[in-house]
Each structure stands twice: as structure tokens, then as C-alpha cells.
Amino acid sequence: MSTTNSNQRGTSSQARRPQPSSAPRSGTPGRTQQQGPAGTSSNRNNTTGTGRPPGQRPPASKSGLVRPAPKAKVRRARLLVSKVDPWSVLKMAFLLSVALGIVTVVASIVLWTVLDLTGIFDRVNGLLDQIMGSETGPAFDLRTFASLGQVASFATIIAVVNVVLLTALAMLSAVLYNISSTLVGGIGVTLTDD
Image 1 (tube, one colour):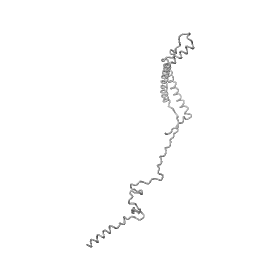
Image 2 (cartoon, rainbow, N blue to C red):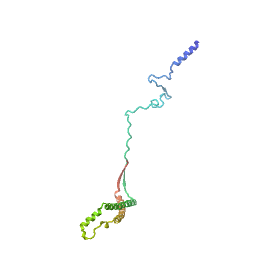
Image 3 (cartoon, rainbow, N blue to C red):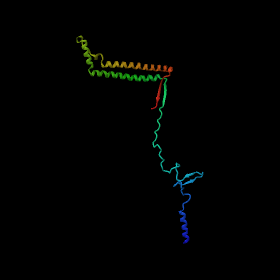
Image 4 (tube, rainbow, N blue to C red):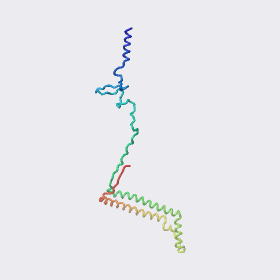
């Protein structure tokens, strides 16, 4: 019995003794350092390599504010319009002058209708009758000289003449611009990003 008790006492005293490799140093409580193969000390508990235990957030910066992204610089490009294609100017001028001609015809018809509905023609006829006198003959009627058909046909003729003139003038101005841009270099244009 004495032999078994002495064996039990010996094992219990060994279990109570701390192992030298796992004992913490006095300068760093709770951390154990181990010599690496190159003689550098490494932290056994630190697996992230950042000097703090895993799962812990990095410390906040001193300012505590996030800087806004810098504004992008506005790009500018200076270009010269050195040549204008006369064919493209001819097409665009033709389309715009046709649109202007349609507007002219429609506006003249609408204007005649408004003048007729408001009674302007009757007032003008009465004024002319008073000026010329009633004994000179039959009463003057403005609608006989400016009927709706005559106004619409006159507006159509003006619109066709405008289409031809504006198209020819636009093409002539494009040719003149090309000639003058060879002398002075053209019109400068500056383009920027929004």
C-alpha cells in the first residue's frame, strides 16, 4: 500500500507543476512567444499576422471621418471647324426650309380663319365704305380680293420660293466658309465634359 500511495503522490505532484514551455512570461501576461527557426519571436495566439487576435476590428483612425473621393477634373478639348461638307448642309437646309414653308402655309390659313371669325373683315369693309362713300357703287368686300383659297395659294408660292432660296443660300454659305477657313483656319470650338 505504501508503494501505490507514493506513486499516486508523485503523479499528482507532476500534474500540479506547470510545464516550462507553456508558462507565460512576466512581461507579457496571457501571451506566449516561441522562438522561430530563424531566431525571430512569433506570437502563437496571433494567426492574422496584424498584431491583434482574430475577429477583432482594427482600431479607428484618429480623425474618425472618411475623406470624400476627389472630384474628377473637367476635360477640355479645343477644336477647329476647318471644313463643312456642302452636301450635308444642302440636305439640312432643304429639310429645314420645307418645314418652314409648311409652317408658313398653315399659319396663313389659321390667321385668315381667325380674322374671319372675329369679324375683322366686316369692320374693314364698313370702314372702306365710309371712306369711299356709298354713292360710288356697290359695297367693297375684302373677301373677294383675299379669299381663303387665294391666301393659301399665295402662301404656298412664298413657301416654295423660300425653300429654293434658303437651300441655295445655305449651300453658298458652306462653300464660302470652306474657302475662308483655308485662309484663317476655321472657327474654334471648346468642348468640355459635364
